[in-house]
Image (cartoon, rainbow, N blue to C red; front, side, top):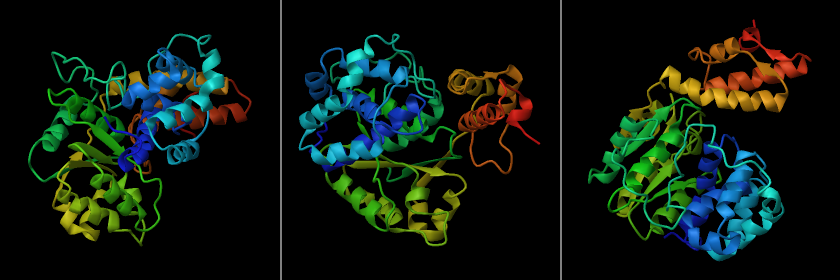
Amino acid sequence: MMRATDSLSIRGLVGLAKAEAKRWGSDHATVTHAASAFAQNWPGEFGDAFGSDGEQLVHRLLAAEQTVGNEAEVRNMITASPDAAALAMRLHAALRGDLAVADLLPEQGAPTRVRTEQTPGLDAAGGSSPQKRTDPLAGLLRGPEALNAAAYLLSDQPLIPALVGRRGCGKTSLAAEIARLLLDLDDPLPTLFFDPGTTVDGEPAMLLRDTLSALTRRTVVVVEDIDELARLGTTEPDVSILREIWQSERFPLARLVVTVTAPYEKRIAQFYGALADRLVILELQPWDENLVRGLVVPVATHLSEQYGVVIDHAAIEAALQPPTDSDTLGHPGLAIARLDVACARVMIAGRRTVTVTDVTPG
């Protein structure tokens, strides 16, 4: 089990909190999301601090969108905690007030976005691997793609899967499904989401090197958004993180998978050809239209409540239209963003109903 005293875990919890935030339909990680991620990876320490019903209460808070804190507070807690037990106590202290009334909230509902399975890590109930499923791909939204990437990570081939797609198309959720497949093996392979928390020249590379060198067992490390870490969209990229990913083979316990926002994967070869030769480009295929609709409709319900408006059916269908040449997002993120802006537009105008013209003005 990974401990908060390991440098990889100190940085890894923030990445897991971000993944948990996306799972529950939030764009930003909070202390509440961190507590939920912590419960799944350090169940013993979590139970000691939060009690036997702690995880259920945290999930009730997340389902009701009653979160506290922000990513910076999570980082400060991690930095100030000498071990997992101390971090659990800090998380509990920050949530104590909300937990006291959480049992008055409705029963836990399923997260509204993309993932419905647990965040990668140890089983929250008791620290053991999940029960084997008859069909390993059951419940996965991108099963075949997850299987393909997982096979590369489990093999002895020195290749690095690169999950490529537009922002909002589900790269993080695919990485989480890959982790689920690897965790379900007879000899589970754990996954760590690496988050350096900085894009200052050289720092992401240094922190990734520290993370990989601190591994004590074979582990998959997900390095998200390397186009942002390497600033591939600028005229002054930072190739040090690309070099560190390329050199990851010198850490035999590490297997890397990266995510890249399209079309910046093409610039990797331009700035660091040696890494491009080791990448296996796995482009995310467009979601099935009915699947996207199933993911977007619950979020639309939430947006309707948040803005105090009514979203008609035609508006939702308009939001689900394919991306245009000017769109940088992909579905389901694009549809959600379109509806979010349309709701804000209607509220400002003092109207009550979101129509097609609000989703596609002009």
